[in-house]
Image 1 (cartoon, rainbow, N blue to C red):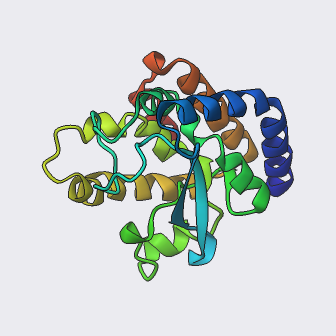
Image 2: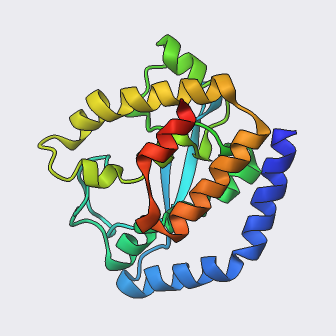
Length: 207
């Protein structure tokens, strides 16, 4: 049932949002004449790698930390807007159609942060990763939390990721269709109205 809803939701989203995709693509291209899309290797279900798609929010040819902190100079002007409203994640609807991802599920990490032999990761990787979940909602302002970190990747690995993994486990234990729909509604709400974001309220859902 969940896979059927994923296909329906992703397919409908791609059709309805086609004008938005076109507008975003043009805006990205006009700023620096680079490709609108960004591909990155992520770890999916059962530890299989896949290419996650995003709208590109950084300048082409830039290098740096694999985790983005607030105020990162690599971000373009268009990219900052996309990231604020989470519009850069929209191309992942195609990943959902392909079967790489689900609409709701633990966010896929890059291989650098995944220890597939650890029990917690074995549980998390037992399901398709998602576009959104409780952990990504609670850490919606993750970039701001990392803004002053001396070592962004270390701060993420040692402080944020462990909490995300525990939230993922809680989600897996309580997963339901009703819960997934509520997570989708919260994601839409905070994407449209980021100023209304309340991490404490969302954390209550994780109980």
